[in-house]
Length: 166
Ligand code: S3P
Image 1 (cartoon, rainbow, N blue to C red):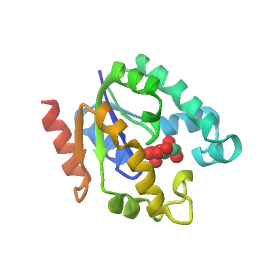
Image 2 (image 1 turned 90 degrees about the horizontal axis):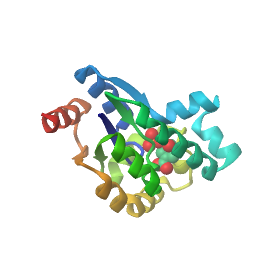
Image 3 (image 1 turned 120 degrees about the horizontal axis):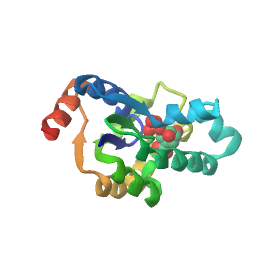
C-alpha cells in the first residue's frame, strides 16, 4: 500500500510528501521528477519541445508502473486526474489524499516560480481559476481523504494525514 498525493499545482504535494514519508519512515517518490529523470529533460522542456499530449502519455506510462511500488509516499503532477485510466491505476496502488487550496493561495505559492508551463501565462490567476474549476470534481471524486491546506503549515497537513491513517 502507498499513500498518493493528488491536487493542483502549488498545493504542496512534494513538500508535504517528503515530510510525510520522513515521519512514517516510508520512501518518497515524485512522479514529475521520475519523468524528468527517465526523459533527461525538465517538464517545461517536454511541454515546449513535445507538447502537453506527449507529456500526458509519459505521465500515464509512469502511473502504470506504480503497481510495482509498495510503502511509498507518492506525489503526482496536478493533471494526473485528467485520464480515468490514471485514476484507476492510482486507486489500485494506494490511498489517495487530495491536497486542496483556494485559488488565491495557489497563486501566492506559484507566483514566483516559472517552471510550471501551464501557469506561465499573462494572467495566471484567471488560468488557475479556470483549470481548477475544470478539475475540481475529478479531484474530489478520486480522493479517499481531502485536506484543505489553505492557511495550514506543512506540519499541520502532515499531522492531519497521519491522524486519518491511524
Ligand atoms: C501539471 C502539474 C505539474 C506538472 C505539469 C502539469 C498540471 O505538476 O505535472 O506541469 O497539469 O497541473 P505539479 O502539480 O507538481 O506542479
